[in-house]
Picture (cartoon, helix red, strand yellow):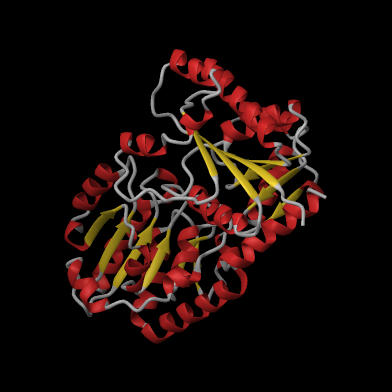
Length: 404
C-alpha cells in the first residue's frame, strides 16, 4: 500500500490546550500507526526576532524547529507533561501575524517541507494556517489541499470571509466537525456542498473505563460525598457562557442548597467570574479547578455536566462527559443537538437562558434514576458513533481516496 505523506499546519500546539489541538494529536497518532507519514507545522508565537529566524531558515536548520515545543510551552507556563508523538516530525514556528516578515519566513518553511518531504496532502487548521497553507500549497503544486472549519464562524469578520472565499479556490476539500458547521460554512462562504465533508470529533473511550473512588475524589476536592455536583468543562472565554451557568446556579441553590458547582478550565475571564460568583453570594458553592489532567476522574464525580455555550462546533466536553456516563445539559447551538439526543442522553436548552438551564438541572437532580439512565444511553451513543477509532478510520478513508 502506498505511503501517504501529510503535512498538517495548525495555529497552536498539537496535543495541548485547545479542543482542535488535542483532537489532531489523537488523530495523527492513529494515522502514523496506520503507515501514514506525518509532518506537523505549529504556528505558535513565543517571541523571536526576524533576524534570528532568517538565519535559521536560510541555513536550512529545520531540526531546530523540532526542538522548541518545550521552550514554547514553558513561556506560557503550561503546567503538565508535554505530549510526545513518536514517528512524527513536529516543527514549531514562532508566528504572530502572517502579514509580516515572519509570515514570509513561515511560508518559506512550509514550502521547504512540502518539497523535501514530497508531501501528498496539506491539511490546515485555523486562520493563519488556512491562509498560508492554501497559498503555499497551491504554489508548490501539492496534489491535494484540505482546509478545516471547527465552528460556525462566530469570529470571522467580513474581511476574513472575503479572504476565505478567495482561498477556497485553492482548496480541494473542506472538512468540518458538525453538520451545523457545514451549513454555516456553505451559507457564509458560498461553498458548493459537494466540496464539504463532515467528520465528527472522536473520543478515546478507554480513558473513561477506569474505576474511580468517587467518594475519595469528592473529599479530595472538598465536596460532600452525597451532595449533588454539577460541572462545566470549558475554557473561561466569553463564548462559553459561564455567566449564564453561574446565574442558573443561584436558582438551583434555592431548591438544592447543598449542590456544588465545579468549573474546569482557564482563561481571561477567571477573575471576573470569581468576582461575579462572589457578587451573587454563591462563592462557597463554586469551585474553579483550572486546567486539569484528570478530566475522566473529575467527570466521574459529576451528577450532571453542563455546556452553556453561545456557540459551538463539535464539543469535546460533551463527548467526554457522555463517555464518562454522565447526562449532559447543553445550549441549543452549533453541533450540540447533533451529539445529544434531547430527553434521552441529556437535555437541550435555549442559549442565554439561565432560568431554563436551572430548571433542567433541578429536574435531573430531583430524578437521579432518570439522570443515570441518560448517562448510560449517552455512553452507548458515544461508543456507537464517536469512538476515536471510528473517526480515525473516516480520516484514513478520505486521505486514501484523494491520494490515489
